[in-house]
Image 1 (cartoon, rainbow, N blue to C red):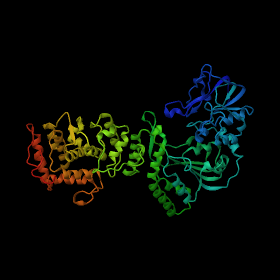
Image 2: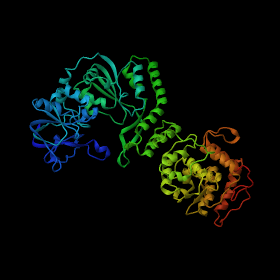
Image 3: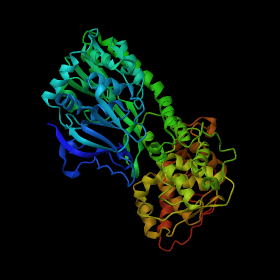
Image 4: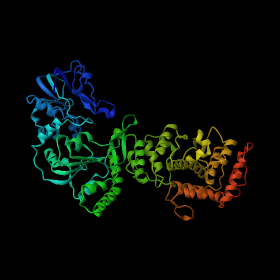
Length: 633
Protein backbone atom coordinates (compact mmCIF):
# COMPACT_ATOMS: atom_id res chain seq x y z
CA UNK A 1 0.00 0.00 0.00
CA UNK A 2 1.39 3.38 -1.02
CA UNK A 3 1.27 6.38 1.27
CA UNK A 4 1.12 9.91 -0.19
CA UNK A 5 2.92 13.01 1.14
CA UNK A 6 2.03 16.36 -0.39
CA UNK A 7 4.52 19.23 -0.75
CA UNK A 8 7.32 17.36 1.04
CA UNK A 9 10.99 18.25 1.24
CA UNK A 10 13.46 15.49 0.24
CA UNK A 11 17.04 15.86 1.53
CA UNK A 12 20.18 14.41 -0.06
CA UNK A 13 22.25 11.92 1.90
CA UNK A 14 23.53 13.53 5.09
CA UNK A 15 24.76 10.35 6.80
CA UNK A 16 24.68 6.70 5.81
CA UNK A 17 26.06 3.66 7.65
CA UNK A 18 27.76 6.00 10.11
CA UNK A 19 26.75 3.91 13.12
CA UNK A 20 30.17 2.21 12.93
CA UNK A 21 31.62 5.54 14.03
CA UNK A 22 28.88 6.62 16.42
CA UNK A 23 26.68 8.38 13.84
CA UNK A 24 23.30 7.62 12.24
CA UNK A 25 22.61 4.51 10.18
CA UNK A 26 20.46 6.52 7.78
CA UNK A 27 19.85 10.27 7.56
CA UNK A 28 18.50 11.10 4.11
CA UNK A 29 15.35 11.39 2.01
CA UNK A 30 11.88 12.65 2.90
CA UNK A 31 11.53 14.96 5.89
CA UNK A 32 8.22 13.47 6.95
CA UNK A 33 5.78 15.49 9.04
CA UNK A 34 5.62 14.13 12.56
CA UNK A 35 8.65 12.00 11.65
CA UNK A 36 8.65 9.65 14.64
CA UNK A 37 5.09 8.47 13.89
CA UNK A 38 5.57 7.58 10.23
CA UNK A 39 5.96 3.81 10.65
CA UNK A 40 6.72 1.78 7.51
CA UNK A 41 7.50 4.81 5.35
CA UNK A 42 10.81 5.21 7.23
CA UNK A 43 13.96 3.11 6.80
CA UNK A 44 13.83 -0.11 8.79
CA UNK A 45 16.25 -2.76 9.89
CA UNK A 46 15.06 -5.78 11.79
CA UNK A 47 11.77 -4.94 13.43
CA UNK A 48 12.12 -1.18 13.93
CA UNK A 49 13.02 1.99 12.04
CA UNK A 50 16.67 3.04 12.35
CA UNK A 51 16.73 6.32 10.44
CA UNK A 52 17.16 9.84 11.79
CA UNK A 53 15.13 12.78 10.48
CA UNK A 54 17.25 14.76 7.98
CA UNK A 55 18.20 18.32 8.82
CA UNK A 56 16.23 20.90 6.79
CA UNK A 57 18.21 23.24 4.53
CA UNK A 58 19.91 26.16 6.19
CA UNK A 59 18.41 29.59 5.77
CA UNK A 60 19.20 30.88 2.30
CA UNK A 61 20.24 27.47 0.94
CA UNK A 62 18.71 26.89 -2.51
CA UNK A 63 15.88 24.36 -2.77
CA UNK A 64 14.96 22.66 -6.04
CA UNK A 65 11.36 21.96 -6.97
CA UNK A 66 9.80 18.89 -8.56
CA UNK A 67 6.24 19.54 -9.57
CA UNK A 68 3.81 16.69 -9.99
CA UNK A 69 4.10 13.22 -8.48
CA UNK A 70 6.95 10.78 -7.89
CA UNK A 71 7.75 7.52 -6.12
CA UNK A 72 10.32 7.18 -3.32
CA UNK A 73 13.11 4.64 -4.03
CA UNK A 74 15.80 5.18 -1.43
CA UNK A 75 19.52 5.95 -1.23
CA UNK A 76 22.27 5.13 -3.68
CA UNK A 77 25.17 3.33 -2.06
CA UNK A 78 28.12 1.81 -3.90
CA UNK A 79 27.96 -1.48 -2.03
CA UNK A 80 26.38 -4.47 -3.75
CA UNK A 81 25.15 -6.19 -0.61
CA UNK A 82 23.73 -3.19 1.22
CA UNK A 83 22.08 -1.73 -1.88
CA UNK A 84 20.24 -4.98 -2.59
CA UNK A 85 19.43 -5.67 1.06
CA UNK A 86 18.23 -2.17 1.97
CA UNK A 87 17.44 0.04 -1.03
CA UNK A 88 15.94 -2.16 -3.75
CA UNK A 89 12.80 -3.50 -2.09
CA UNK A 90 10.44 -0.55 -2.47
CA UNK A 91 10.95 -0.65 -6.24
CA UNK A 92 8.67 -3.40 -7.55
CA UNK A 93 5.60 -2.70 -5.39
CA UNK A 94 5.81 1.05 -6.09
CA UNK A 95 6.76 0.82 -9.76
CA UNK A 96 4.04 -1.70 -10.54
CA UNK A 97 1.40 0.25 -8.62
CA UNK A 98 2.22 3.53 -10.44
CA UNK A 99 3.98 2.70 -13.73
CA UNK A 100 3.57 6.30 -14.87
CA UNK A 101 5.71 7.99 -12.21
CA UNK A 102 9.46 8.66 -11.87
CA UNK A 103 11.33 7.02 -8.99
CA UNK A 104 13.49 9.23 -6.76
CA UNK A 105 16.82 8.16 -5.30
CA UNK A 106 19.13 10.45 -3.32
CA UNK A 107 22.92 10.62 -3.12
CA UNK A 108 25.40 12.90 -1.42
CA UNK A 109 25.56 16.57 -2.43
CA UNK A 110 27.49 17.12 -5.64
CA UNK A 111 27.30 13.48 -6.77
CA UNK A 112 24.04 13.57 -8.69
CA UNK A 113 25.69 13.85 -12.12
CA UNK A 114 28.08 10.95 -11.55
CA UNK A 115 27.39 7.72 -13.49
CA UNK A 116 25.56 5.05 -11.57
CA UNK A 117 27.69 2.10 -10.42
CA UNK A 118 27.32 -0.66 -12.97
CA UNK A 119 25.56 -3.11 -10.65
CA UNK A 120 22.97 -0.49 -9.63
CA UNK A 121 22.20 0.26 -13.27
CA UNK A 122 21.94 -3.51 -13.88
CA UNK A 123 19.47 -3.87 -10.98
CA UNK A 124 17.30 -1.06 -12.35
CA UNK A 125 17.36 -2.65 -15.81
CA UNK A 126 16.52 -6.11 -14.47
CA UNK A 127 13.56 -4.76 -12.52
CA UNK A 128 12.36 -2.72 -15.52
CA UNK A 129 12.72 0.76 -14.01
CA UNK A 130 16.03 2.02 -15.49
CA UNK A 131 14.39 4.79 -17.51
CA UNK A 132 12.33 6.04 -14.59
CA UNK A 133 15.01 6.68 -11.93
CA UNK A 134 15.89 10.28 -11.10
CA UNK A 135 18.81 11.05 -8.76
CA UNK A 136 18.66 14.02 -6.37
CA UNK A 137 21.73 15.54 -4.70
CA UNK A 138 20.19 18.83 -3.48
CA UNK A 139 17.24 19.56 -1.21
CA UNK A 140 14.14 19.20 -3.40
CA UNK A 141 10.53 20.00 -2.69
CA UNK A 142 8.23 17.40 -4.31
CA UNK A 143 4.60 18.14 -5.11
CA UNK A 144 3.37 14.63 -4.22
CA UNK A 145 5.59 11.76 -3.06
CA UNK A 146 4.27 8.21 -2.95
CA UNK A 147 6.08 5.86 -0.56
CA UNK A 148 5.83 2.06 -0.49
CA UNK A 149 7.06 0.16 2.58
CA UNK A 150 10.21 -1.93 2.27
CA UNK A 151 9.16 -5.39 1.08
CA UNK A 152 12.34 -6.71 2.76
CA UNK A 153 14.67 -5.08 5.26
CA UNK A 154 18.10 -6.01 6.56
CA UNK A 155 17.76 -8.40 9.48
CA UNK A 156 14.01 -8.34 9.19
CA UNK A 157 11.34 -11.04 8.91
CA UNK A 158 10.96 -13.25 5.80
CA UNK A 159 9.49 -11.59 2.71
CA UNK A 160 5.80 -12.03 1.95
CA UNK A 161 4.71 -14.64 -0.58
CA UNK A 162 3.21 -12.05 -2.92
CA UNK A 163 6.52 -10.16 -3.09
CA UNK A 164 8.40 -13.36 -3.94
CA UNK A 165 5.79 -14.01 -6.64
CA UNK A 166 6.48 -10.58 -8.19
CA UNK A 167 10.22 -11.38 -8.24
CA UNK A 168 9.58 -14.82 -9.72
CA UNK A 169 7.71 -13.18 -12.59
CA UNK A 170 10.78 -11.03 -13.32
CA UNK A 171 13.17 -13.98 -13.29
CA UNK A 172 11.17 -15.72 -16.01
CA UNK A 173 12.74 -13.32 -18.52
CA UNK A 174 16.31 -14.37 -17.64
CA UNK A 175 18.38 -16.19 -20.27
CA UNK A 176 18.82 -19.94 -19.91
CA UNK A 177 22.22 -20.94 -18.49
CA UNK A 178 23.92 -24.34 -18.83
CA UNK A 179 22.72 -26.75 -16.17
CA UNK A 180 25.14 -27.97 -13.54
CA UNK A 181 25.43 -29.76 -10.21
CA UNK A 182 27.61 -28.01 -7.61
CA UNK A 183 28.43 -24.31 -8.02
CA UNK A 184 30.88 -22.69 -5.58
CA UNK A 185 30.33 -18.92 -5.51
CA UNK A 186 33.61 -17.47 -4.28
CA UNK A 187 34.64 -14.14 -2.74
CA UNK A 188 38.31 -14.72 -3.50
CA UNK A 189 38.37 -12.10 -6.26
CA UNK A 190 36.83 -9.22 -4.32
CA UNK A 191 36.48 -10.14 -0.69
CA UNK A 192 38.96 -10.14 2.13
CA UNK A 193 38.86 -11.29 5.68
CA UNK A 194 38.66 -15.07 5.26
CA UNK A 195 42.12 -16.58 5.26
CA UNK A 196 42.40 -19.06 2.41
CA UNK A 197 39.39 -18.30 0.22
CA UNK A 198 41.42 -19.05 -2.89
CA UNK A 199 42.40 -22.36 -1.30
CA UNK A 200 38.69 -23.08 -0.84
CA UNK A 201 38.23 -22.61 -4.57
CA UNK A 202 40.88 -25.25 -5.26
CA UNK A 203 39.30 -27.58 -2.69
CA UNK A 204 35.91 -27.48 -4.42
CA UNK A 205 37.46 -27.57 -7.89
CA UNK A 206 39.38 -30.72 -6.97
CA UNK A 207 36.08 -32.37 -6.08
CA UNK A 208 34.42 -31.38 -9.35
CA UNK A 209 32.50 -28.20 -8.47
CA UNK A 210 32.25 -25.31 -10.88
CA UNK A 211 34.01 -22.23 -9.45
CA UNK A 212 32.15 -18.98 -10.01
CA UNK A 213 33.31 -15.44 -9.25
CA UNK A 214 30.13 -13.38 -9.76
CA UNK A 215 31.89 -10.05 -10.21
CA UNK A 216 33.26 -11.35 -13.51
CA UNK A 217 29.78 -11.84 -15.02
CA UNK A 218 26.82 -9.59 -15.87
CA UNK A 219 24.07 -9.53 -13.27
CA UNK A 220 21.49 -11.30 -15.43
CA UNK A 221 23.97 -14.07 -16.19
CA UNK A 222 24.72 -14.46 -12.46
CA UNK A 223 21.04 -14.93 -11.64
CA UNK A 224 20.51 -17.38 -14.52
CA UNK A 225 23.54 -19.40 -13.42
CA UNK A 226 22.22 -19.70 -9.87
CA UNK A 227 18.89 -20.97 -11.20
CA UNK A 228 20.62 -23.60 -13.36
CA UNK A 229 22.47 -25.47 -10.57
CA UNK A 230 21.10 -28.01 -8.14
CA UNK A 231 23.62 -27.23 -5.35
CA UNK A 232 24.75 -23.69 -4.63
CA UNK A 233 27.61 -23.07 -2.17
CA UNK A 234 28.28 -19.46 -1.17
CA UNK A 235 30.86 -18.09 1.20
CA UNK A 236 28.99 -15.73 3.49
CA UNK A 237 29.07 -12.24 2.01
CA UNK A 238 27.43 -9.69 -0.24
CA UNK A 239 26.99 -12.05 -3.18
CA UNK A 240 24.20 -13.80 -1.26
CA UNK A 241 22.11 -10.63 -1.45
CA UNK A 242 22.01 -11.08 -5.22
CA UNK A 243 19.58 -13.94 -4.53
CA UNK A 244 17.13 -11.33 -3.20
CA UNK A 245 16.41 -10.43 -6.81
CA UNK A 246 14.98 -13.93 -7.31
CA UNK A 247 11.68 -15.21 -6.05
CA UNK A 248 12.28 -18.98 -6.21
CA UNK A 249 15.36 -21.18 -6.71
CA UNK A 250 14.89 -24.89 -7.45
CA UNK A 251 18.16 -26.03 -5.87
CA UNK A 252 19.64 -26.29 -2.39
CA UNK A 253 21.80 -23.56 -0.89
CA UNK A 254 24.76 -23.97 1.48
CA UNK A 255 26.22 -20.92 3.23
CA UNK A 256 29.81 -21.22 4.48
CA UNK A 257 29.56 -19.04 7.56
CA UNK A 258 32.56 -16.91 8.47
CA UNK A 259 30.87 -15.36 11.51
CA UNK A 260 28.72 -16.84 14.27
CA UNK A 261 25.04 -17.23 13.48
CA UNK A 262 22.97 -18.22 10.45
CA UNK A 263 23.55 -15.41 7.98
CA UNK A 264 20.56 -14.63 5.76
CA UNK A 265 18.25 -17.24 7.27
CA UNK A 266 15.17 -15.03 6.97
CA UNK A 267 15.57 -13.92 3.37
CA UNK A 268 17.17 -17.10 1.98
CA UNK A 269 15.07 -19.92 3.43
CA UNK A 270 11.80 -18.90 1.66
CA UNK A 271 13.57 -18.82 -1.71
CA UNK A 272 15.35 -22.20 -1.86
CA UNK A 273 14.44 -25.87 -1.69
CA UNK A 274 16.73 -26.39 1.33
CA UNK A 275 19.10 -24.11 3.25
CA UNK A 276 22.23 -25.30 5.06
CA UNK A 277 24.75 -23.35 7.13
CA UNK A 278 28.25 -24.74 7.59
CA UNK A 279 30.25 -22.96 10.33
CA UNK A 280 33.72 -22.36 8.91
CA UNK A 281 34.49 -19.47 11.25
CA UNK A 282 37.53 -20.19 13.34
CA UNK A 283 39.33 -17.64 15.52
CA UNK A 284 39.32 -14.06 14.27
CA UNK A 285 41.26 -10.81 14.48
CA UNK A 286 39.09 -7.70 14.51
CA UNK A 287 39.56 -3.98 14.43
CA UNK A 288 38.13 -1.82 17.18
CA UNK A 289 35.41 0.80 16.80
CA UNK A 290 34.43 3.59 19.17
CA UNK A 291 35.06 2.96 22.87
CA UNK A 292 37.02 -0.20 22.15
CA UNK A 293 34.10 -2.19 20.72
CA UNK A 294 35.07 -5.13 18.53
CA UNK A 295 34.39 -4.24 14.90
CA UNK A 296 32.88 -7.61 14.00
CA UNK A 297 32.05 -6.41 10.50
CA UNK A 298 35.73 -6.10 9.57
CA UNK A 299 38.51 -8.50 10.38
CA UNK A 300 40.51 -11.55 9.50
CA UNK A 301 38.87 -14.95 10.08
CA UNK A 302 40.80 -18.21 10.12
CA UNK A 303 39.11 -21.26 8.63
CA UNK A 304 37.76 -24.10 10.71
CA UNK A 305 38.06 -26.89 8.14
CA UNK A 306 36.54 -29.73 10.20
CA UNK A 307 32.92 -29.20 8.93
CA UNK A 308 34.08 -29.49 5.31
CA UNK A 309 34.40 -33.27 5.60
CA UNK A 310 30.65 -33.75 6.12
CA UNK A 311 29.84 -31.08 3.54
CA UNK A 312 31.96 -32.81 0.88
CA UNK A 313 30.26 -36.15 1.54
CA UNK A 314 26.83 -34.51 1.14
CA UNK A 315 27.67 -32.58 -2.02
CA UNK A 316 29.65 -35.34 -3.72
CA UNK A 317 28.06 -38.63 -2.62
CA UNK A 318 29.62 -40.58 -5.48
CA UNK A 319 33.22 -39.76 -4.56
CA UNK A 320 35.45 -42.26 -2.80
CA UNK A 321 36.37 -41.46 0.78
CA UNK A 322 40.05 -41.35 -0.17
CA UNK A 323 39.45 -38.60 -2.73
CA UNK A 324 37.50 -36.50 -0.24
CA UNK A 325 40.14 -36.96 2.45
CA UNK A 326 42.97 -36.12 0.04
CA UNK A 327 41.29 -32.87 -1.03
CA UNK A 328 40.76 -31.86 2.60
CA UNK A 329 44.37 -32.64 3.50
CA UNK A 330 45.61 -30.55 0.59
CA UNK A 331 43.43 -27.67 1.76
CA UNK A 332 44.73 -27.90 5.32
CA UNK A 333 48.36 -28.02 4.16
CA UNK A 334 47.85 -24.99 1.97
CA UNK A 335 46.17 -23.04 4.75
CA UNK A 336 49.04 -23.82 7.09
CA UNK A 337 51.42 -22.28 4.54
CA UNK A 338 49.25 -19.26 3.74
CA UNK A 339 47.99 -18.11 7.12
CA UNK A 340 51.13 -16.21 8.13
CA UNK A 341 51.67 -14.25 4.88
CA UNK A 342 47.94 -13.59 4.57
CA UNK A 343 47.82 -12.16 8.09
CA UNK A 344 50.80 -9.88 7.55
CA UNK A 345 49.47 -8.70 4.18
CA UNK A 346 46.07 -7.95 5.71
CA UNK A 347 47.59 -5.94 8.56
CA UNK A 348 49.81 -4.00 6.16
CA UNK A 349 46.82 -3.03 4.04
CA UNK A 350 44.84 -1.85 7.09
CA UNK A 351 47.42 -0.27 9.39
CA UNK A 352 46.80 3.38 10.04
CA UNK A 353 43.09 3.06 9.32
CA UNK A 354 40.81 4.18 12.16
CA UNK A 355 39.48 0.73 13.03
CA UNK A 356 43.03 -0.69 13.29
CA UNK A 357 44.73 1.90 15.50
CA UNK A 358 44.36 -0.13 18.72
CA UNK A 359 47.46 -2.25 18.16
CA UNK A 360 47.27 -3.82 21.59
CA UNK A 361 43.78 -5.18 20.90
CA UNK A 362 44.86 -6.56 17.53
CA UNK A 363 47.85 -8.29 19.14
CA UNK A 364 45.59 -9.81 21.78
CA UNK A 365 43.36 -11.20 19.03
CA UNK A 366 46.39 -12.57 17.19
CA UNK A 367 47.64 -14.25 20.33
CA UNK A 368 44.20 -15.75 20.91
CA UNK A 369 43.95 -17.36 17.49
CA UNK A 370 46.51 -20.04 18.28
CA UNK A 371 47.30 -20.14 14.55
CA UNK A 372 50.51 -18.15 14.31
CA UNK A 373 53.99 -18.80 15.65
CA UNK A 374 55.56 -16.34 18.02
CA UNK A 375 57.94 -15.11 15.35
CA UNK A 376 55.04 -14.34 12.99
CA UNK A 377 53.19 -12.50 15.73
CA UNK A 378 56.34 -10.52 16.38
CA UNK A 379 56.42 -9.59 12.69
CA UNK A 380 52.75 -8.60 12.96
CA UNK A 381 53.56 -6.24 15.81
CA UNK A 382 56.30 -4.69 13.69
CA UNK A 383 53.79 -4.16 10.88
CA UNK A 384 51.37 -2.46 13.27
CA UNK A 385 54.19 -0.21 14.49
CA UNK A 386 54.88 0.85 10.92
CA UNK A 387 58.12 -1.11 10.52
CA UNK A 388 59.12 -3.10 7.46
CA UNK A 389 60.83 -5.76 9.55
CA UNK A 390 61.49 -6.73 13.14
CA UNK A 391 64.58 -5.06 14.58
CA UNK A 392 67.33 -7.64 15.10
CA UNK A 393 69.39 -7.14 18.24
CA UNK A 394 71.01 -9.51 20.71
CA UNK A 395 71.70 -9.55 24.42
CA UNK A 396 75.35 -9.00 23.63
CA UNK A 397 74.62 -5.91 21.56
CA UNK A 398 73.84 -2.36 22.57
CA UNK A 399 70.15 -2.19 23.46
CA UNK A 400 68.21 1.03 23.51
CA UNK A 401 67.99 2.82 26.87
CA UNK A 402 64.67 2.92 28.61
CA UNK A 403 64.44 6.62 27.76
CA UNK A 404 63.84 5.60 24.14
CA UNK A 405 60.47 4.23 25.17
CA UNK A 406 59.42 7.80 25.96
CA UNK A 407 60.26 9.12 22.50
CA UNK A 408 57.99 10.03 19.63
CA UNK A 409 57.38 6.44 18.56
CA UNK A 410 57.34 4.23 21.67
CA UNK A 411 55.98 1.14 19.86
CA UNK A 412 58.96 1.22 17.50
CA UNK A 413 61.48 1.52 20.31
CA UNK A 414 59.67 -1.16 22.23
CA UNK A 415 59.91 -3.50 19.25
CA UNK A 416 63.62 -2.79 19.02
CA UNK A 417 63.97 -3.95 22.61
CA UNK A 418 61.77 -6.92 21.93
CA UNK A 419 63.89 -7.83 18.94
CA UNK A 420 66.55 -9.01 21.34
CA UNK A 421 64.48 -12.12 21.95
CA UNK A 422 65.23 -14.83 19.40
CA UNK A 423 61.66 -16.12 19.34
CA UNK A 424 59.06 -14.06 21.14
CA UNK A 425 55.58 -12.59 20.97
CA UNK A 426 54.32 -9.17 22.09
CA UNK A 427 51.60 -10.34 24.42
CA UNK A 428 49.04 -7.95 25.96
CA UNK A 429 51.02 -7.63 29.16
CA UNK A 430 54.13 -6.63 27.27
CA UNK A 431 52.30 -4.04 25.22
CA UNK A 432 50.96 -2.61 28.47
CA UNK A 433 54.47 -2.52 29.90
CA UNK A 434 55.67 -0.42 26.98
CA UNK A 435 52.76 2.00 27.30
CA UNK A 436 53.20 2.19 31.07
CA UNK A 437 56.89 2.99 30.73
CA UNK A 438 56.00 5.72 28.28
CA UNK A 439 53.59 7.24 30.78
CA UNK A 440 55.51 6.73 33.99
CA UNK A 441 59.04 7.75 33.12
CA UNK A 442 60.52 4.28 33.58
CA UNK A 443 58.97 3.30 36.92
CA UNK A 444 57.33 -0.11 36.77
CA UNK A 445 54.40 -1.15 38.93
CA UNK A 446 53.11 -4.68 39.58
CA UNK A 447 50.00 -4.16 37.49
CA UNK A 448 52.23 -3.53 34.50
CA UNK A 449 54.64 -6.41 35.06
CA UNK A 450 52.06 -9.13 34.49
CA UNK A 451 52.91 -10.75 31.18
CA UNK A 452 54.31 -14.23 30.99
CA UNK A 453 57.43 -14.95 28.97
CA UNK A 454 58.30 -11.62 27.43
CA UNK A 455 58.01 -9.34 30.42
CA UNK A 456 61.31 -10.89 31.35
CA UNK A 457 62.67 -10.11 27.91
CA UNK A 458 61.78 -6.43 28.25
CA UNK A 459 63.29 -6.28 31.72
CA UNK A 460 66.40 -7.98 30.40
CA UNK A 461 66.68 -5.35 27.71
CA UNK A 462 66.28 -2.56 30.23
CA UNK A 463 68.84 -4.13 32.52
CA UNK A 464 71.43 -4.30 29.78
CA UNK A 465 70.75 -0.77 28.58
CA UNK A 466 72.78 2.29 29.40
CA UNK A 467 71.30 4.64 31.94
CA UNK A 468 70.40 5.00 35.57
CA UNK A 469 69.28 2.24 37.89
CA UNK A 470 65.67 1.33 37.19
CA UNK A 471 63.25 1.71 40.06
CA UNK A 472 60.68 -1.14 40.22
CA UNK A 473 57.90 -0.29 42.65
CA UNK A 474 55.84 -3.20 44.01
CA UNK A 475 52.72 -2.17 45.86
CA UNK A 476 52.38 -5.56 47.57
CA UNK A 477 48.72 -6.44 46.91
CA UNK A 478 47.29 -9.63 48.40
CA UNK A 479 48.91 -12.11 46.00
CA UNK A 480 52.36 -10.73 46.88
CA UNK A 481 51.75 -11.55 50.55
CA UNK A 482 50.20 -14.99 50.17
CA UNK A 483 52.84 -17.51 49.02
CA UNK A 484 50.28 -19.89 47.57
CA UNK A 485 48.68 -17.08 45.58
CA UNK A 486 52.11 -15.83 44.56
CA UNK A 487 52.73 -19.13 42.80
CA UNK A 488 50.44 -17.96 40.00
CA UNK A 489 52.74 -14.97 39.49
CA UNK A 490 55.80 -17.20 39.46
CA UNK A 491 56.89 -16.36 35.87
CA UNK A 492 57.14 -12.68 36.75
CA UNK A 493 58.79 -13.31 40.11
CA UNK A 494 61.32 -15.67 38.56
CA UNK A 495 62.29 -13.00 36.09
CA UNK A 496 62.64 -10.34 38.74
CA UNK A 497 64.88 -12.64 40.76
CA UNK A 498 66.97 -13.74 37.79
CA UNK A 499 67.28 -10.18 36.57
CA UNK A 500 68.62 -8.97 39.90
CA UNK A 501 71.00 -11.90 40.17
CA UNK A 502 72.39 -11.29 36.69
CA UNK A 503 72.45 -7.47 36.87
CA UNK A 504 72.77 -6.59 40.57
CA UNK A 505 73.66 -2.95 39.96
CA UNK A 506 70.95 -2.13 37.46
CA UNK A 507 67.69 -2.48 39.41
CA UNK A 508 66.33 -1.23 42.69
CA UNK A 509 63.10 -2.84 43.91
CA UNK A 510 60.91 -1.12 46.45
CA UNK A 511 57.88 -2.34 48.37
CA UNK A 512 55.97 -0.53 51.15
CA UNK A 513 55.87 -3.70 53.25
CA UNK A 514 58.34 -6.42 53.99
CA UNK A 515 57.44 -9.98 54.82
CA UNK A 516 56.97 -10.25 58.58
CA UNK A 517 57.49 -13.36 60.70
CA UNK A 518 53.94 -14.53 60.06
CA UNK A 519 54.53 -14.17 56.34
CA UNK A 520 57.70 -16.25 56.54
CA UNK A 521 55.75 -18.87 58.48
CA UNK A 522 53.17 -18.95 55.70
CA UNK A 523 55.93 -19.35 53.13
CA UNK A 524 57.42 -22.15 55.22
CA UNK A 525 54.11 -24.04 55.28
CA UNK A 526 53.09 -23.32 51.67
CA UNK A 527 52.48 -26.57 49.69
CA UNK A 528 54.88 -25.57 46.93
CA UNK A 529 57.79 -27.32 45.22
CA UNK A 530 61.09 -26.56 46.88
CA UNK A 531 62.38 -24.53 43.94
CA UNK A 532 59.31 -22.31 44.00
CA UNK A 533 59.67 -21.69 47.72
CA UNK A 534 63.29 -20.79 47.15
CA UNK A 535 62.42 -18.33 44.42
CA UNK A 536 59.77 -16.73 46.63
CA UNK A 537 62.21 -16.55 49.52
CA UNK A 538 64.82 -14.94 47.33
CA UNK A 539 62.23 -12.54 46.06
CA UNK A 540 61.49 -11.32 49.57
CA UNK A 541 65.17 -11.10 50.38
CA UNK A 542 65.44 -9.05 47.21
CA UNK A 543 62.87 -6.62 48.63
CA UNK A 544 64.88 -6.43 51.86
CA UNK A 545 68.07 -5.70 49.95
CA UNK A 546 69.68 -9.09 50.66
CA UNK A 547 71.12 -11.15 47.86
CA UNK A 548 72.01 -14.85 48.00
CA UNK A 549 74.33 -14.63 45.03
CA UNK A 550 77.64 -16.13 44.06
CA UNK A 551 79.32 -15.41 40.75
CA UNK A 552 76.79 -13.62 38.51
CA UNK A 553 77.96 -15.24 35.28
CA UNK A 554 76.04 -18.58 35.62
CA UNK A 555 72.91 -16.60 36.38
CA UNK A 556 73.52 -14.43 33.36
CA UNK A 557 73.66 -17.64 31.31
CA UNK A 558 70.36 -18.77 32.83
CA UNK A 559 68.88 -15.38 32.08
CA UNK A 560 70.10 -15.64 28.49
CA UNK A 561 68.51 -19.07 28.20
CA UNK A 562 65.28 -17.49 29.38
CA UNK A 563 65.43 -14.63 26.90
CA UNK A 564 66.84 -16.62 23.98
CA UNK A 565 65.19 -20.08 23.92
CA UNK A 566 67.56 -21.26 21.21
CA UNK A 567 70.70 -20.26 23.07
CA UNK A 568 73.16 -22.84 24.37
CA UNK A 569 73.11 -23.47 28.11
CA UNK A 570 75.19 -25.60 30.43
CA UNK A 571 77.42 -28.12 28.75
CA UNK A 572 76.94 -26.47 25.38
CA UNK A 573 73.68 -28.36 24.77
CA UNK A 574 70.61 -26.46 23.53
CA UNK A 575 67.85 -26.42 26.11
CA UNK A 576 64.34 -26.49 24.64
CA UNK A 577 62.72 -25.41 27.90
CA UNK A 578 64.43 -22.51 29.68
CA UNK A 579 62.37 -23.24 32.78
CA UNK A 580 63.93 -26.67 32.99
CA UNK A 581 67.33 -24.97 33.01
CA UNK A 582 66.14 -22.56 35.68
CA UNK A 583 64.91 -25.37 37.90
CA UNK A 584 68.13 -27.30 37.35
CA UNK A 585 70.17 -24.35 38.54
CA UNK A 586 67.95 -23.80 41.54
CA UNK A 587 68.22 -27.45 42.51
CA UNK A 588 71.97 -27.32 42.06
CA UNK A 589 72.21 -24.29 44.31
CA UNK A 590 70.38 -26.25 47.00
CA UNK A 591 72.63 -29.28 46.39
CA UNK A 592 71.66 -32.19 44.21
CA UNK A 593 70.12 -34.30 46.97
CA UNK A 594 66.42 -33.32 47.06
CA UNK A 595 65.74 -34.38 50.70
CA UNK A 596 68.86 -32.54 51.76
CA UNK A 597 67.74 -29.48 49.82
CA UNK A 598 64.28 -29.65 51.40
CA UNK A 599 65.84 -29.84 54.84
CA UNK A 600 68.08 -26.86 54.16
CA UNK A 601 65.17 -24.76 52.96
CA UNK A 602 63.11 -25.79 55.98
CA UNK A 603 65.87 -24.81 58.40
CA UNK A 604 66.42 -21.52 56.66
CA UNK A 605 62.72 -20.64 56.58
CA UNK A 606 62.37 -21.59 60.23
CA UNK A 607 65.02 -19.07 61.17
CA UNK A 608 63.40 -16.37 59.00
CA UNK A 609 60.00 -17.12 60.52
CA UNK A 610 61.17 -16.46 64.09
CA UNK A 611 59.79 -13.14 65.35
CA UNK A 612 63.24 -12.07 66.48
CA UNK A 613 64.81 -12.73 63.09
CA UNK A 614 65.63 -9.20 61.98
CA UNK A 615 68.69 -10.23 59.99
CA UNK A 616 70.23 -13.30 58.48
CA UNK A 617 73.83 -14.42 58.46
CA UNK A 618 75.27 -17.30 56.56
CA UNK A 619 78.58 -18.56 55.40
CA UNK A 620 77.74 -18.71 51.69
CA UNK A 621 79.45 -16.79 48.97
CA UNK A 622 76.93 -13.96 48.94
CA UNK A 623 75.21 -11.80 51.52
CA UNK A 624 72.21 -13.61 52.91
CA UNK A 625 73.00 -16.86 51.13
CA UNK A 626 70.71 -19.74 52.25
CA UNK A 627 73.41 -22.35 51.69
CA UNK A 628 76.93 -22.92 52.92
CA UNK A 629 79.80 -22.78 50.54
CA UNK A 630 77.82 -23.43 47.38
CA UNK A 631 79.99 -23.15 44.37
CA UNK A 632 77.40 -23.59 41.68
CA UNK A 633 76.22 -19.99 41.51
